[in-house]
Length: 471
Image (cartoon, rainbow, N blue to C red; front, side, top):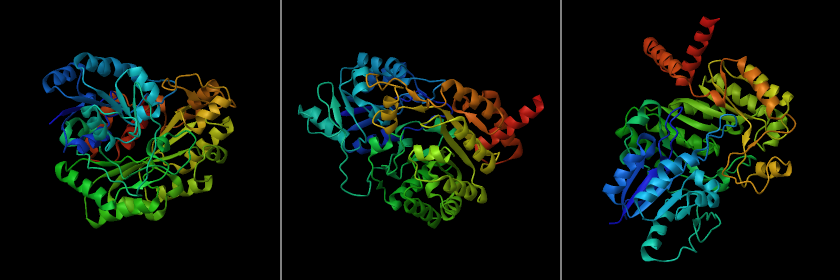
C-alpha cells in the first residue's frame, strides 16, 4: 500500500492552536486506499519533519495551507515565507516525491501560491474526493487535464462546483486519531463542520468562492453521531462549529440543537459566525439547552449605511433585536466588527460604538478589525481597483488592506485608539492576544473562584480589576 504524508502547515499558535480539520478529513478519506500519516507542524519542528520523512518514506506528500496571513493591517504577519522556509524547502530537499498543496488559504490564490512555493500540484477547494483521484492519476502516469479544481506547474483548472445534492457527505475527521490531540485540550476545541457553501453576498468574503454559493448540508444525525463518538473518546473537550455562519440556514441549526438535546448529550459547545439576520429566541434558547457556553456574533458594523454597503442580509433594527435576544438569554458572546469599509466615516464608526455601549454587556468581548483584507475574486477587490487603492498588477498573495478614502488610515487609527481606549471590553485586533501575566491572573481567578465561564469573560474581569488598581 502506497504511503501518504499529510502536513498541517499552520505555524500560528496564538491566541490558541487550531486543530487541523481539513487535512484530517482528507486523511480519513484516504485510509481505505493508502497508508496515511498526519504531521502537525503546530506542535513540532522542521527537524522532526525531516526525520519523519526519512523514516516513513512517503510516496506522496500533501500540505494543507489554512491562512496566508493574520488579516491584521497594523501588525500584519505574512505566513508564506515562514512556511516556505520551515516546511516547503526542507520537504523538497528531503524527498523527491510529488507534493500536493491545498486548503482554504491556498484556494484564495492558487495560481500565485503554487508559483511561490514551486510545488507539483494544487487542489482548489475541498479535497476529500479529488485527492485520491489525483494520486491514482499520478501513480498510473495519466494526465490530469479533466480533473476539476486541480492545477499543476504546467496545467491550470478553473474551480467548478458540481452540486449533485443539497446534502454534504464527508467522513468523520477523527482528528485525535491522526495527531497528538493533547496540546488542543488546554484551550482548544474539537472542530465540527455542519455544511459547506454560503448564500450570503458579503463584499469581502472568500467563502462562496472556496465552498460554493449554495448550501450543502450534512445530515443532522451524521453531525451528532460524530460529536457523540468524539465525546466518548475525549469526554471533556468542547466542540466548536466552524461553519462560516452556523445559524444559516436557520432550520438546519435548530435541528442540530434539537438532536443534541434529544440524545441528552452533556457537552460544551461554541460556534463562530452567528449571523444576526437569522437569530431568533427559539435559536438562542435551544443553543443554551444544547450546551452552548459562548458564541461569536459577526455583524461587522452597526451603521445602517455600512451594513448595506457590506451587502449584509440584515438591517440595523434586526441587529438590535439580535443583541436584545442574546442579552435576554445571557448567552456569552464575542462580537466582531470590521471598520474602514466602503463609505466608512467617523460618524458611521461612532454609530457602531454607540451600538456597543447600548446593546453589548460589559462582560462580553468586542473585537475591532481595523481595515479589511482585500481578497481576490470578491466585490471589495473590484471596489479597491476602481478606487485606485490597488492595481490589477499587484500580487494578491501579498497582504493588501482596504480603508475607505472617506476616512483614511491615519484618521481611522487615531479614532479607534481613542474609542477602544475608553472601553474595557473592546479590543483592537492588534491587541487580541492576552499577555502571559494576564492569562495567569485569569487562570488563578477561575481556580480560586471555582467558576466556569468563557475564558474571555475571566480575562475581561481580571483586566478591569488590574486597571482599577493602577488608577
